[in-house]
Amino acid sequence: MIEAEGLTKRFGDRLAVDGLSFTVRPGQVTGFLGPNGAGKSTTMRMILGLDAPTSGRVRVSGQPYAKLANPLREVGALLDAKAIHGGRTAYNHLLCLAQTNNLPRRRVGEVLELVGLTGVAKKRSRGFSLGMGQRLGIASALLGDPKILMFDEPVNGLDPEGILWIRNLMKALAAEGRTVFVSSHLMSEMENTADHLLVIGRGKMIADCTVKEFIDQNSVLAIRVRTPDAAALAGLVTTAGGKAVRESDGSLLVTELAMDRIGDLAFDGGVRLHELSPLQASLEQAFMELTKDSVEFHAAVPAIGPEALR
Amino acid sequence: MTATIPAPGSLAASLPPASGRSGFIGMLRSEWTKLRTVRSTMWSLLAMAAISIGLMSLFAWVSMRRWDRFDPEERLSLAHRPLEIILARPVFIAQLVVAVLGVMVISAEYTTGMIRSTLQAQPRRLTVLAAKVTVFAALMLVVGEALSFAAFFLGRQLIAAHIPVQLSDPGVARSVVGAGLYIAMLGLFSLAFGAIIRHTAGAITAVLGLILIVSNLTNLLPDSWGAHINAWMPTNAGQLIYEPTLAPDHLLTQWQGYAVFGGWTALLLAVAAVLLVRRDA
Image 1: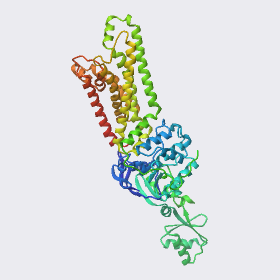
Image 2 (image 1 turned 45 degrees about the vertical axis):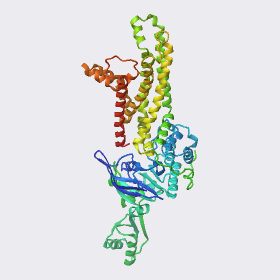
Image 3 (image 1 turned 120 degrees about the vertical axis):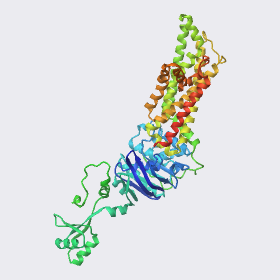
Image 4 (image 1 turned 90 degrees about the horizontal axis):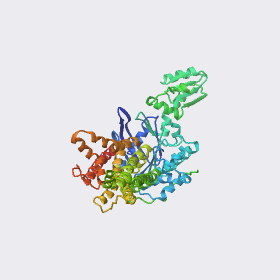
């Protein structure tokens, strides 16, 4: 369990993290989503006590991180895979960390086995590929058999096999009842992995909900209605407070009215329907829609609305 | 390379329950592992021993070869300061390596990013600093004493024909032991610089600049100012500990000098500790 209250971090005159309050619960994968520069890494660094909050506080298993008796047994984190002295072998790197928390030496061999690095245990990590470095980082996160795992952009730069492996690992860890907190700037990454979502933009919380709620709230953009009597239905929709737009193929795009309600209106008004279907944006589009006002570094992204889906 | 997803529960299978709190002892073991598992530590120390003792031997040997061609004043001056050749010079060379190693004990953690792994594993930062200081001081004390005794006994053989010197001569035993003490303290002095500056190149420049340039330049200050500041400069004061004898009007005794060096080091370490606790890693 990770609990943040009003967590704030200011760098000079820039608010990197702005009053975040949230709880990350055990037994599920919680996705931490936001555009680049939204404050995800800074938040994770504050959870681990690497950065001190400007105000607010964050607790891990009910305590500030620095008070944990054996931090590696409580939290395993992969913040960036480069937090390693390249001149040291994989084995010795893990040994240094294991010794700080009085973990037995054989544990090092076990986690290396677990991530598939046994064959290169005696090799200096400087020569590791990105994927191997990532696996070494995960091995260090698993050292203390922690209750909480945090991964910052874990699949960046991995090949599809590596991505699948990490996804399945995160799910397996959550299934064991652990708290899994994983950040990403790609919604598609979370779609298949996360149960719960925290979405931030410019350091502020935008959404704190389950993935399903997120989809329901954000992904239905319009209802497509095909009917031989479009003019009549458009009138009914407008009277009921919705908006209907005539498409070039003769169908109607209805917004601001629920799908069931449109069906009822048509039935009551005696209008024949040939199609009644939700136009769904992908989660990626929903996410971009949600965060478009809070993207730190804007490229010219076309606005996502019903028009974009035609 | 294969990696399988661990079966539920398999992660925990072999880990015994925690006994007590992660603290100084575990951190000591970790820091020792860190020092000995990076190739550069051992290579630097070997190179340091080879170059400092090698050059000392060469100087000593050449001086003895040319002894008959020296004029009497030169002979007298050499004979008066036997430790100049066989102790002070090798220590002067060795200190350059020790300064670099001391800085890198901490700065390498920052330049590689290892510091984030270290502080995740042990977030109590003063424990981390204390362990680093203890392990490196112990290593440098052993290395320093080994080096100064080796230099002394080898050098003594080489110059025995014209400049006999015994461990029992006045101040000699203290000088030989003191040279090792100087090296250990210099290691900590440099470590503090590494912790404060955090960039390898910057910290090395600062320490070596202080030892090699600033300390000597203070001599040029006018009047007694220069003499006083010069005497109290950290390494100038510290180096007195391996002077067998001092001029009676010298501002500090050997042990006072070492205490001054220790005071500077303690001050810098205190600054380093405050900064380590306050700054974001």
